[in-house]
Length: 301
Image 1 (cartoon, one colour):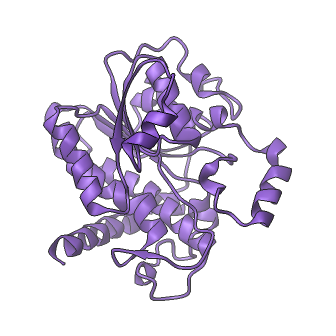
Image 2: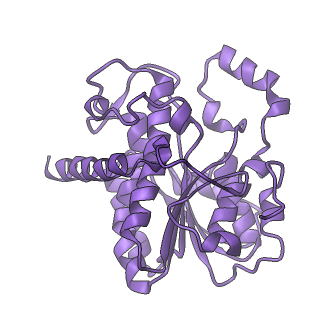
C-alpha cells in the first residue's frame, strides 16, 4: 500500500513522474481541483487538453502556468458543444490517453431542466457520458485509454434510497437538491463500473473516486448560511492542492494503472462489499441504457 494520505498534494503524488508522452483531457479546469489538476499535470510534462465553458475562461485560469495546455470550450449541458469539442479533438488528432471527468455543479435552488433533463444529472453525468461516447472509438483504436470519473461519498450518502430514481430524471417527482447531487455522483461511479466491464480484455481502464470534502468554487452560488458553515468547517476540509491528489493519482500513478472498475479515496483503493451501491452492476447497466436513450432522443428531437 502506498504512503499517500488525505493530506498528500497532487504535486507530491506526481513527484518524479515524467508525463511528457501523455495527453490528458480534463473537464472543468477554470477553478478548484480541475484547475489544480491541469496545473500539476502540465508541470509534469503532460499535454493537457483543458476544458471550460469558454476558451477565454480556460486561458485566464491557465495564465502563467508552466507546460503545454490547450484550452477548449465545453458546455456539458449543451449537446452541440459536447460534439463540437470532441470533433475538434478528433480532427486535430488530439486523442487523449487519459480523460478526467472532473467538471461538476451543485444545485442550490429549485429544479432546473436542460434539454428536458434535470440539470445536475446532465451536467455532472450525462454530458460526460456523451463526451466519452464520442472519444471512445478513437481511443479503442489506439489501444490506450484511462477514464477517471470524479464521484463523491455523496453517491451513497445523499442519493435516493433506490440509487438512481429513473422515473424522476426529468423532474417528474419531488426535487431535493442533495439527492440530485448524490444521484449525479452515483451515476458517475456506476458509469465507470459499466464502462470498465465493457472494456475488459483491452488495455483501457475506468475508475471512479471520491476527492474528499473540499471548499471550492462549486459553492459560489450557495446561500449565505451554507457558505458560513463551510468557512467554519475550513479546518476540517481538504485544500484544493490536496483535493486534486486522488484524481491525479488515478490518472497517472503506475500503482493505479493496473486497476479498472475500482473506487478510490485519499489515493487508496476502497474495498467495496458486493452489495454496496457503488458496486451495483444491474443498476450500472440500466443507467447506461437510459443514458443512451436520452441522448438518442435529443438527437432525433
